[in-house]
Length: 115
Length: 116
Image (tube, rainbow over all chains, first blue to last red; front, side):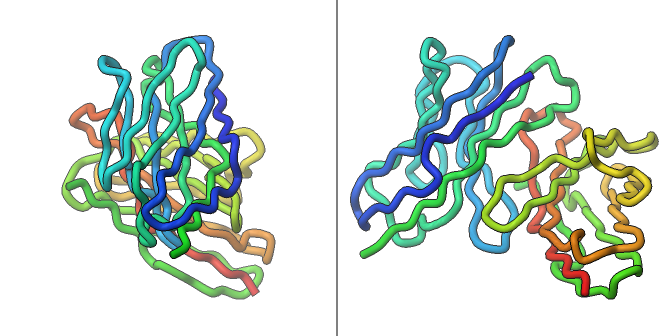
């Protein structure tokens, strides 16, 4: 079984400042890793995913994440945030061996961007 | 891109009645769909995995007789909350996996259920 820990429940950040959202996972097998964003009262939108290959993954809206197998981490970063980045961010993991591709979500990190 | 719709987007019902929520994949086929429940300021909790043409697989602690799932076609799954009670009030989100073998799930916009 897999589990995901998002280390920060809320991250306040000023506009145009960088932000890093931390995600650690636990698994006895190899994993796929995802970051999703959720705006208020909406579903989830995929920001980026790691399946294999290069450990630095670039996603939409200027986000990127780095897979670190030794530290079992998949931290999300953006060098300069906008007000519109205010949202809830979820890290998720699935096992390639799971034929259904079930996702296990972290608790989420609320990002609040202020001017 | 892959689009998943949900209907209705919000619903208010009286305690004891049943409510049906639809989840549709609009531009792809999905043998597998998922239903999640999300409480305010909390993460998504997987309720069940819905497979076209077969019975849904429910997660531990989810009452299958209360949350009826039907996946009758490759583009439609429905969740019926039977004999709803105020504690069933929540945000319900579905997702769908593209049959073309892509690894990601595409999420619907969610349905806000309020039981009075």
